[in-house]
Length: 185
Image (cartoon, rainbow, N blue to C red; front, side, top):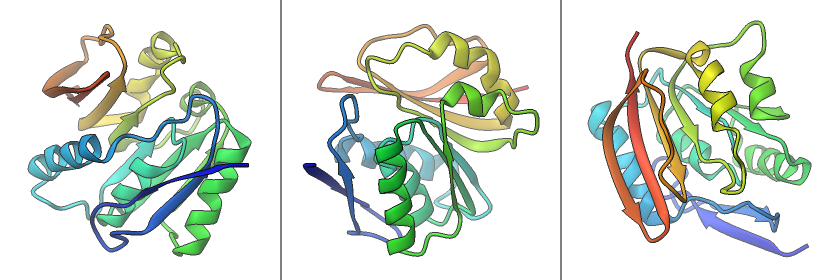
C-alpha cells in the first residue's frame, strides 16, 4: 500500500504530517486552497475556533478536520465511508492525542439521517469528485446547521446550491472550485 501525505499548516499541530493510504477518489484539499479557506474562516470567526463544532462530512485523509482541530475547535466530527481511510484517521488521532475528534465510519447520508443529530458551526463538504450525492445531502443538511453556521463546498465543477445557503466567498484554483456559504434560519 503506497502512502500519501499532507501537513497541518497552522495551529498547535502545525507541520504534523498526515499520512493516508492511496484510495481511488481520495484527494486532500491542496495546501493553498486549505490556507485560503482557513483565512476566510479566521476572518469570519475573528481567529477564534474555541467552542466551535466542526463536521467534516467526507473526511478522506482527515486533512480539513485535523486543521480545524489544530486551530482549537472544541469538537470535530469526521465522517468517512472507506475503511482504510477511517483506520488512517484513527492512527493520526492516536499519534497526536486528538481527543476532540470523533469518527463516524459510514456514509455521509447515513450520518445526516441519524435521529439525534448535533448542530455544527462549520460543515466541510469536500466529497470525491466522482461522488454525486449533493441532492440527497441538501435535503438533510439543515438538520446539522445552526443559525449562522458556515458551509465549505469544494468541487471540480459548478453545482447548484440550495437557497438556504448564502455565498460569502468563492474562488477557483486550477480545476478546484471552493466556496464558503452561510446558513440563516
